[in-house]
Length: 401
Ligand code: ADP
Image (cartoon, rainbow, N blue to C red):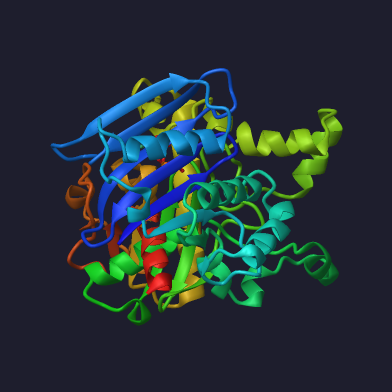
């Protein structure tokens, strides 16, 4: 089976074509600045192999349909095509951000599914409408090919009420659907299963704390294969500290800033989403730049890393309490996979919890799953590259079986 995975944003569209017999990536790329004066398209056939062919185009791309059409022309084209007919694509998997309470698993898209996704638009106004647009474009360009929706929230739908409810008037949960949903679910699911495989266990046999540290950061407590708590909340602003997002703060701060800085609530919301986190502390939000600044003696950059690591460490402690017994901790995503300094700082002084990192094994980057704990460590610590596209494609294949 060949599965095309689409992640449509408001002005971008990431895509990947996978051969599910081998799980090889046939094509990947991104269409960006859709609707702007000059758009850009990046296309890679057989990426990361000797046969890689890359094409970059800079031209106006009016809308998502035009962008997807350009991609399709390249996929089936002479220059760097990998198939000859769009009908060779067996399914299209879509990343959908907010599934709300309606979706506890991936599903094949039909009109009622689209309506239910649209019903969640108020909970993810920047994302769900764009994801729906991606589905509409796929339906138009690939008539007859099944579309599968995979939700960022789905893996977290197993959380118990005590974990997903906020201590707010209960009616607000029913009236406005205010509750913790959690995000990055596809990634947490993928790495929690992968670590079980690496440990020679079934997901149902182990408890795992998954630590996804990218531009957005989130963590999950996974008990016997099921998520029982996660750090992001009703929106992806909550939880640990992120590149530009504050993570958890005292909620009273919102009103205090609004009043004292003469800002609207919407402006404060932007400040918490775009000007906070690592960037708020040291003006930089890319961890690589921050480490370079630390090396140059930038104290704010050092403080930002310390705060970042401290909050992740605290949440590991919280999830150790939630799970009672932890078998493994998994680091994933841009920072989790690549940043040995951050990982080391997070895992420092955790031997009381049975977590002992082997600093030699932790050093450097591998690009494949590897263990970084000492032989004596009660809890295993793993670094596992996430693969949300593969997880989405696997779910599409499962559903269509
Ligand atoms: P996104 O959430 O957008 O998918 P990524 O998972 O790609 O983001 O993560 C981006 C983050 O990963 C950035 O903060 C970047 O600095 C960090 N990162 C990538 N490579 C490295 C590296 N070698 N060392 C430290 N941080 C890295």
